Length: 267
Image (cartoon, rainbow, N blue to C red; front, top):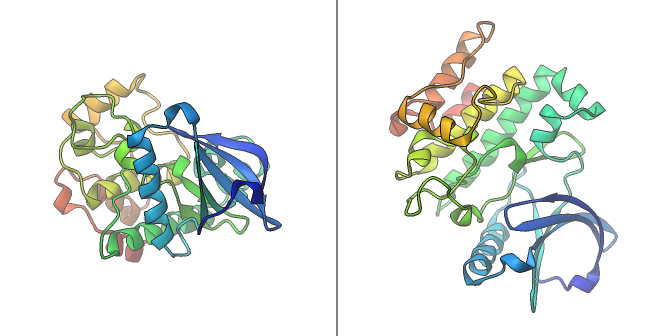
């Protein structure tokens, strides 16, 4: 699975993550994505987390999980080579301005299919012998290929994502808009915390709105969602079964939330 960096011809920058940069690249005449670690973020912790992501991704094989192709492990250089997802991430597609965004926003069936793709990918992760909790499920980590198939990406780094509301939290950091209340409070999290995040993504796919746009800061989101138990407003035109699914994903008691097996059936 090891790839020498010389085998890659590196092209345009596609994005920057918490401590990695993603470039488009060519490998064996194939378009790929190449995520490298930012040099000044390299320390024992980040290198171990990156190695853990490589170890985890090597074992994952599912149509709704981004395919790992290999890793670059050289002195002062670590990178992950994966399939290139030509249409980018769901956040850009839902809230951007291009023609792809327009076709997605005008196609409710396609958005429902994407919700099901996400749920199937998560069901696979949660069904493994050692279940993988994503911890940072959000549209920016859901990538879309040329055929509009949605795939889950960017796991393994979750344990390291910096958590900003308290230093000794059990919950690894995520992004407040999509995080479950227990994660925002720093309480224990499990697979059903991912289900809460999925509910926010489903709400976004239905309403085409950005979650908590009316709140001005992450601290307000923490207060409202984690302590005042506020939830996103569901428009009156949303059909009952879908409205009920959203409410179920957002239940305060984690055990009462549906599993992804049940969500896949309900979509």
